[in-house]
Length: 53
Image (tube, rainbow, N blue to C red; front, side, top):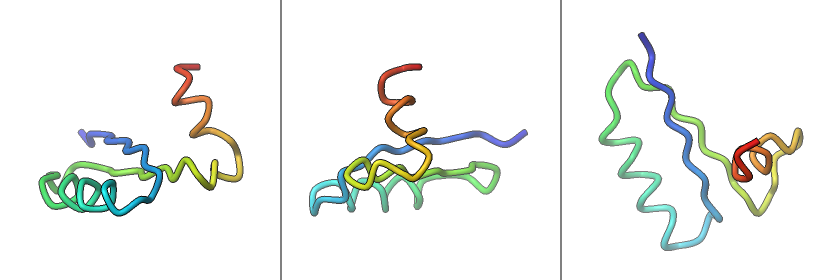
């Protein structure tokens, strides 16, 4: 069973090491999705997820 990890980041110099750490610490069965909130993704799904919709 795959685990879903969603990371929300502004892409700033403080965030990037954390994103890297999450990727390094994840297991082989983890699926990591990184949402760059500044870009707001094309489908706006990241905004809905941040709002808890």
